[in-house]
Image (tube, rainbow over all chains, first blue to last red; front, side, top):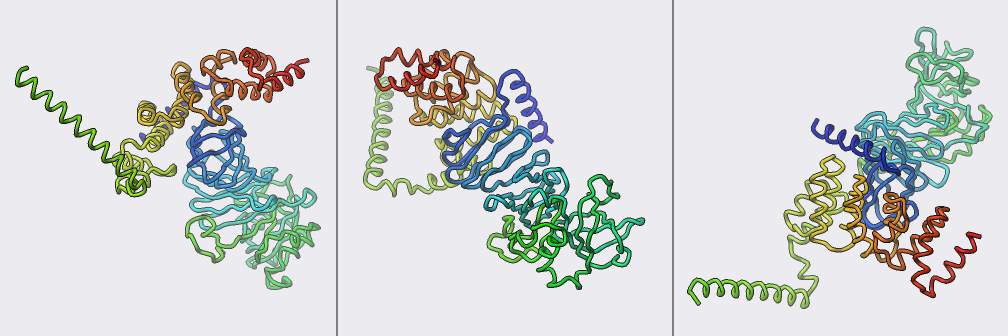
Length: 299
Length: 208
């Protein structure tokens, strides 16, 4: 309680002072040595203003924002910081105590779902984002604000936004259920629950199915679902050629996208939600930093 | 001379001899084996506890082992500031400047006052940091420039040498603040340093 009160005073005093004087200060940054701040070389610590670009030189750096969020950037990382988010341009960031803060990378928004959420978000090459969650959970949304994944503690997913032409394609796998005449499915990879519309769904209720379809942005989903998918193909998993390994490629073909075969995430199960391919990465827990050295799959 | 005065003189001389001897021994130890001298358990333990990612408890343990560990005081000050405890933050950062007269404590304290928008206390520490800067003046110049609308006054308050003026001129030109840059170019030109001829000529050309 005392901690919260003191923080509130700190936030209030900062806001008041910099309502008068520009530029607005958003927090402080500390590092074990030199780092780059707005292109300048800075030693050990510095002041962050809205839109500041920070880049590690050697070793990590740690950011404390006046809103209470804390994050750190790993070696070789760069990001542009605002009071409520960071645009990650390179490397990896670790978020903690960041309920009102989010990270953006490759057009995706990665947002903690509670104050105690901690996780590592990294750019893999130039076209893929990895989200590894240590505690709590993170929500991943695409550029249009569509929920792409819920990443739970102890798991790690890789995301790859697809070409704009394939942005509406969805390919998900899970058990189809019925609720008051609506069909729901929670994807096994992304943990996103969607409402599915289309023909022949009643016969598949209770079975694990692969659904390929497109997002119906104008429809309002039933409670418990985040979006409505108009199915173009529904297949029971046992009937799907090649099992789960072929799922991504088959779905991408059915959906008219090049996603599946071209995703290259290199794991067994690939989901596509909101035009973003998602797959579990190796060493979910180990990747999130919970169990150093663990290399088994999280799923 | 009274007995009391003699006794006091004796105590004074004894203390002086003791302190001088301790210093001489410490210096001799360091000269004979710097690595061994730095292997003092307290020194190592304190330094180990005062990493930049250390918790406040670890930092407090570090300064209890070695109260002259300025980096630990700096981190304690920044932690206190983040928690909203500004008096403690200020005390810790000032303590770091008293035991370490190099660049980092001065830079840190200048930043602290900048964040408080406390120009009066900012300038003395910014001036000290400017005097101790050996490579990149720009971070300090950006803070100072944000607190004063007159570049000439900024340069004067920082008691800037030629290197600082050059950095300030380049910074203002890159920010397309040519009127402000003209003020600094004037200060630089007044120094008549031949090394600035090309820089000033290029700037004059840009103004035309």
